[in-house]
Image 1 (cartoon, each protein chain N blue to C red):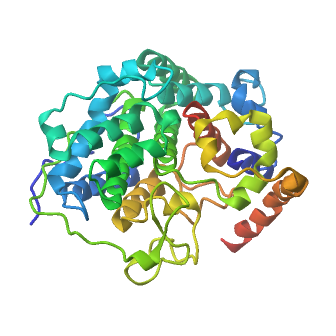
Image 2 (cartoon, each protein chain N blue to C red):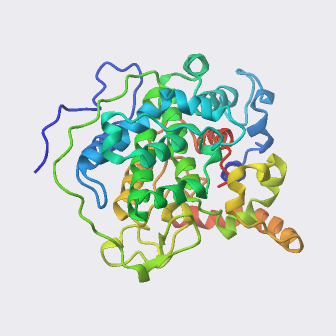
Length: 150
Length: 259
């Protein structure tokens, strides 16, 4: 959901389907909604999958197109979420109810429901899902107030 | 008393320009891990960190991951000298957290409790393991050699515990500080907010474990103030917010993390 909100707030047309199909992003040199999306997604995937050869290749690709400063910061973010996902799933926290409601359409689209850790969270009852989807659309507007406060 | 250790995280010859704030956070975390915690000694906390590293090359974990069930193999880890400091169940839990995150379940925590570990020990162990992993993964992602772990500071754990009436039990596998519980000595935990989302509360049974996570995330990702401001581009970064969330989501997907 954070990706979709960020896309909306930054006035890009980037869609959550990019998360599953980064290879469908325009090639380097053409206008991209997320710069270096293909290389960033491959880099993150290689780190999380634990394959050293794949990681070295993905890092070389990212270095080549984006430069080492991008790789250094990208590595920090990916490493942080290697940690955060484990904190969440080792402690068994459920998804917070407002986030559960707001991310309904994203979860439907990306099919997160089959993950083992989904059992820690209660699904929104079917009659309330239209309200949840509406809330998901309202979230960016709510978060714009956060921008004004800072 | 503090142990004298060789300076770490200076990376003078690194080809990658890691921000100084990130390296400073790592230095602080190494220093904190070397100290006695609330429920483990400094030596034990560093044993947790070492097991986090060793798990990557664990033969049993590789074979276990190929099983249909994460509990399909009736084998135990052979304990190293550091493993002996924390015991077989802690070693097993740490290895599962590192190598098989998509199949973590309540059973891991229940097994740890059954073996005699307290909820405080379990939460502190999860915190040290996950934060160590984040530091190491940053280096591994860039093909850099891992930093040596520091020398432990002697002394027993503090034994400090939050009173039961401040805890929320049953929401997660482990007790957490109640939503309105960031008061008194814990007033800093939610960064001045009245309440907090679950990921912030997950380690709050051990307030210092949450502080470790905050020190880490403020530099690797974003501060609590920056995180909800999706339109702001974080200062001093080579990537923008949309790129950050793409990376975060892709890692979460590979780890099959619903949260």
